[in-house]
Image (cartoon, rainbow, N blue to C red):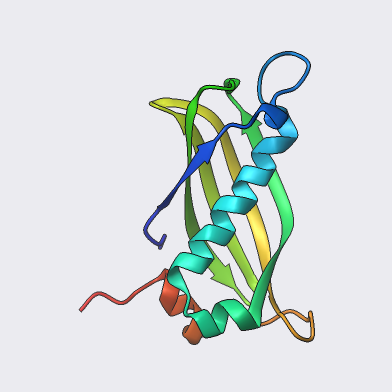
Length: 133
């Protein structure tokens, strides 16, 4: 069961543009990271944000169309599942109705002090998968 999606607006910066005049492919991964971490900061309590961190384990990206300097871009990310210390996200980067890229990624939750994997228990998963009353 997926959680609700999170929309993350993106401002294309001049530094994002490569020699071909469009956004460099590597920048899309930065946008995914920005969106996932913003999602966490929005949903989790300040104590959890302070005590946990996230590191990327894997990204699988499919590029569909290029983005350009003046484009209005948005990353729509959703946490699809969690297992142990891992979280599995799906992110779609769009310009209007045009899909620019689709990304599947996995992340590891770590304890911010020990830097060791931190199991994603009910105390954390409830931020992403709220129970309907």
